[in-house]
Image (tube, rainbow, N blue to C red; front, side, top):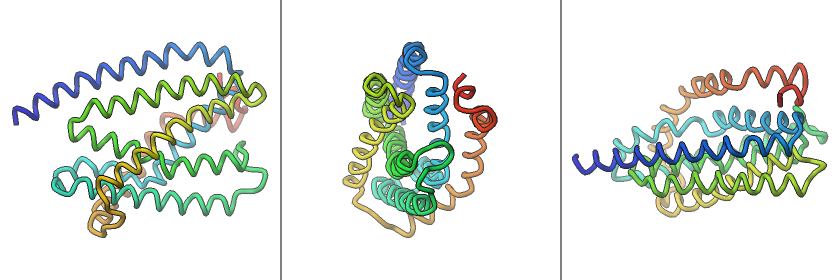
Amino acid sequence: MKNNSEKAIKSGFWYVVSNVLIRAIGIITAPVYTRLLSTADTGYANNFNNDVAMITVVTCLCLIYSVGRAKIDFSEEFDKYMSSIQTLSSTFGLIVLIIVMIFTPAGGMNGYSRILIFLMFAYLVIYPSIDYMQYKYRFEYRYKENIRISVIITVTTVLLSIGLILLMPSAKGTAKILGTVLPSAAVGLWCYFNLLKSGRTLYNKKYWRYALRIGIPMIPHGLAMIVLASIDTQMIKSMCGFSDAGL
């Protein structure tokens, strides 16, 4: 018990330090983005991120909320549990991707091209694995690995976003989206295969039922938090356009 308490305190300390540093990077780079992007480009990229956050709540079935309790109930089978719910999440995300692409017009929708819509939903198949891996590390007090993932994503996102914006001057909003999505997608793939490798479980009825019983009732809660955080931007975009949303 004492050893776990020491690990928890040490992990908490370094999580605070890493969060401060990551937020500092965001503050430092904000003026860079405002100089490189127009208000319309900023609104376009931010609206994409808001849509991703909202849709993720549904496509991942909020299974992440089951992880903390599962660490207690399946302590000896935790790796198998994580591998199994990851498969459930990605399978459902893939089904949603197929359905969306069938009904998406050739010209795209909601201001996005068909290619960007495909990228969004393909990204949502992989992205939840980052959360699964970080939650796994968190409950195992492996703060170094957890912080490493956050730092890698933050730094590569900034560098790639700025690089793509400079290389794609006629499509800066799309460049910012790609700079955000590609690093997370790469890390997500790494997390996906590592969780699969450690758990070696694609399907387990017991794990799936357990996760769904906890996750599905949490979907309205997850959606409510995202809506409260972004409803103003969504409304401005719908009524006034991406430029005003960027402001």
